[in-house]
Image (tube, rainbow, N blue to C red; front, side, top):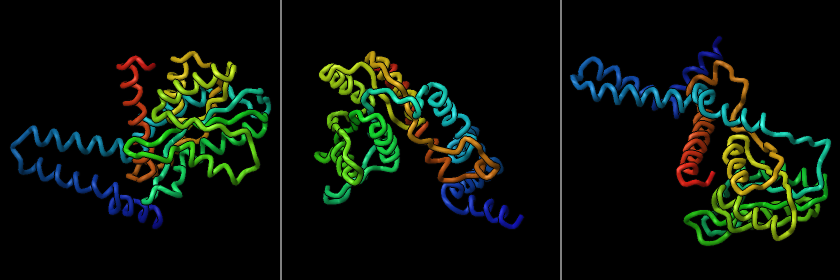
Length: 255
């Protein structure tokens, strides 16, 4: 019981829970003193948004639909690998101040490691698709991936260094497949990113077997997950990015 009380208190005196707690105080103050219905409405909406994005409620509404879709759509069987190339989509890198010794983000590492496992088992090429980050001038994700992969036993590793978006991933991989006369790939990416990736690769008529590399959040939530916490906030922000990305791609006829 004492530990549970500590967890509850901790969730509201640290970020992001502290922001929610302070906004609840502001809302109660406005309800008692303000004559502005508009300000009360805005304050209430801010609290609702915070409750959704800071807690497991948002995970249920935003994250799980995307990740369950990815799980159900995948027909990957690691015991029956096909002799086809593997494509791992980039998920970002952490640029160092001087531009050297940059490292893959944790998301990118998960995707690349899954791709390495498949490529090593079926002895086929592994393509890492990731260009230079927007706002930077050099060092592509594929370059950093090459450095990372050097610690493993040699595999046929191919860098795709032009793509900066999921749409460009599909565009560049389509061209590579045509140039090298392959008709199907293993498509490796995070569960939360899989739906948009699949729709883009469908748009380019690329045959693929989708492979989930990692999940953004636990699918078995406890009561603690419904308290404000950084893990939920991080996963929900990723999910919001994906939902907005899919809407934007539909508007621009990319999927």
